[in-house]
Length: 206
Length: 101
Image 1 (tube, each protein chain N blue to C red):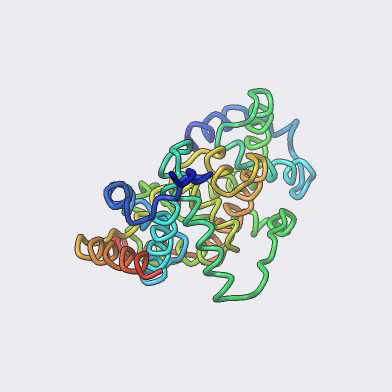
Image 2 (tube, each protein chain N blue to C red):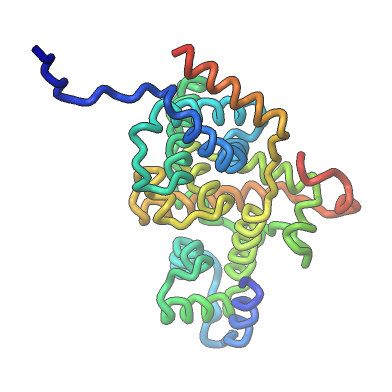
């Protein structure tokens, strides 16, 4: 007598996916590393995040049906992994940014400037001091604001795509992005960065 | 983009009709909409109103320029890249971890 067929098909073990995984890894590892580095601000944490992201992707590959773009799927996995990893490390709730805290209270505060001095952004970013101030300002942002800023202004995604990744509607994305930009603007302008003699010093990679 | 908007705003300076002390409600309202303005998401009539305000309010004009610069710097900040050895090593670690689980 033949054994009755199982009601559900057995799940394919993950090991049967090496080719699919290799293609996914090859096509997206640079993108996810760039994103991870922008979120984490340093190399080792960024590598840990890439590893965690692709490990989760490997295990979830059989369930990924290509309804979303692979890059959007990976950005989502990386974002969630980042929040989990940060929570584990820091263990403290993050504070909200209120718009009121960015309303300048004096004329001087209103007129603080972010130094560009008529330079192109690439030229301005040759200034090590400005580059570090920008990185530090982004690093100081609470995670959910940093994520919105990195995805929208640095990775160049649309508000709709950022919403899909972060599980938010577009309005909420724009609200977070606006607060994040105001925060970074305040941090940068309050530093009083100058361009004296620093345009050519330091590579842009650090 | 900033330059275009800034020059447009200069053409519309009306110091007599728009002179005001700073910290007025108008400036605070503007501050709430600046990202939408920078991202070209506002209706044309509101953009016109904002440009008119910027022309009359140097503080807001400086403020928006600094916010625009912030966004520009974020957009152009280069990120470091993995070396090919790092890519290969990471792939191996991921597959080892996946098979160990």
